[in-house]
Every structure is written in structure tokens, then in C-alpha cells.
Length: 313
Image (cartoon, rainbow, N blue to C red; front, side):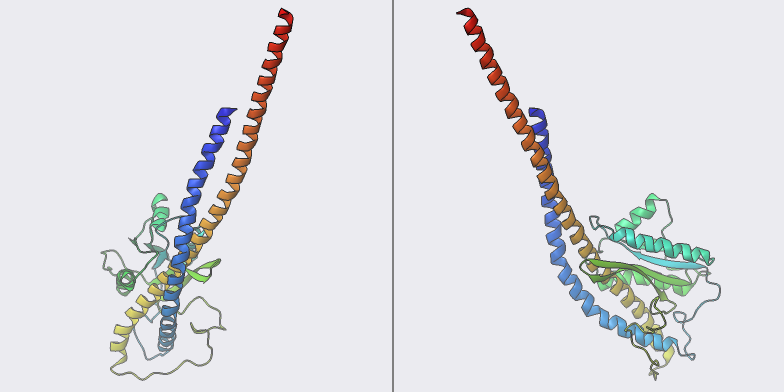
């Protein structure tokens, strides 16, 4: 009985140590959410306006650029998956990986070959464990991405797209004919949604016909005059557009990761409280049973001694 009490008390101490860790991670994640949200809000207007402008440019039949033109019979299709570097963030990684698998299945059904580019250790671990080929990966910045991180990823995937599936990309591998980004969109502290969007050839998002632009406005698209030539402007502007879209996805994913980690750690902390209460109650019951047993043994021993003394008299 005393061994059971010691075991229960040891389990209570272990759970309390885990609770301290989850509580600390919850507080850290909470402190990061505000900064991540501020970065998302600061970057989103620029991304939306650039997307709207380039959508209007793409509608012009007079423009001819590889990032704007659909390719006949696309073969290899790049998927840039954004996951986290660390765990303890609930279903954050599972949801975005599920969206990637659904997109891959859709592409295969269309006769295309998906090619994976992964940001984040968790996504890399998932596909490495399953022995799935990964074209390139980047890690170490999922919680605090910078524009330079987005540029590094965009340089490779844009180079692969410009080369095409029949050419050779910057990494020495065959290129791609389309580029999709699968990331997590931050909606609120308790809601984050995995989404897939096509970045090249230019397409705003997978949206319905009622929302023709990234900003949600409807109506005719604007017309532009170019100085210098459209080709020169597009050559400079379109790669920056891809950088911006990837950076916006990284910022949204970072905010979503912190929110998901806060929620997961809060749930773990609350569950630890319940476990501690249950184990403490069990330990108290075991200790009371032990005390009752010891009292019974003392009373029984005293009774036996009294009976033995009476017999001697």
C-alpha cells in the first residue's frame, strides 16, 4: 500500500513538471502571436494589391511572359509545402500535409507529376519517413520567417518554373510547369485553415467567380500603360510577385503555428490539471486506506496483548 502511494506521488510530480513546460510554451506562443499578426497585417495589403495588378496584366492578350502563360500539356508540377520546425502545435501540420496529399492526388488524376518542395522539419520528416522524394527543403525559420528566407525558396522554385519540365532548374534537376503553395491561413486565435493556391502561371487563388480579385472586389480589371516596355517591367516585377506571395504565406503560417501551439499547450496544461487532481485524489485515498490499515493493525495488536495479559492472570 505504501508503495502505491509513492508511485502516485511520483506521477503527480512528473505531471507537474510537464505542466510547467506546456504552460511556459503557451505563454511564449501567446507573446509571439501579436507580433506575427502585426507582420501579417503589414504584408497583406501589398500582397493583395500586387496580385490584383498582375491579375489585370495577365488578362491582357498583348503580354507574353512565362510566368503568365499556361503551358500545353504540363508534366511536372511543383508543390511548395509550408510546415513547422517544431511540434506541440495540434493538428497544424497534419492539416496542411493532408491538403498537400489531396492536391497531389488531384494532379496525378490529371496526368501530372507532383514535385515536392518543403519548408519546415515536420513536413520533411513526414515524407522522409515514408521514403517519398523531396526536390528541396528549407528549415529553421518557420516561426520567424524573413523576406530573405522567402527569396531563397522563391529563387529555386521560380528558376525551376522558368526552365520548364523539359529544361534543367537551378538545382540541376528537371524544371516544373506549374507552382502551387500549400500553407495555413490565419483566421482567428482558434481557427486556422490549410489552403492551396497556384502561384505560377499567375492565378490569384482557388476562388469562385464572385471573387475575381484577391481583394474581393468585382468589376472590370484596370488597363495599364507601360514605361519602359512591358517585357522589361514584367521580368523585374513577376519574380518579386512570387517572392511576395511566398513571404505572405510564410507570415500567415507563422501566425497560425503560434496560435495552434498556444491552443495545444493550453489544452495540455488543462489536461495536466485534471490528471493531477485525479492522481492526488487516488493518492489521498490510498494514504487513508494505509492509515486505516495501520490503525486496524495497532488496535488488533493491542487487543491481542490485552487478551494475552488476561490469560496470564
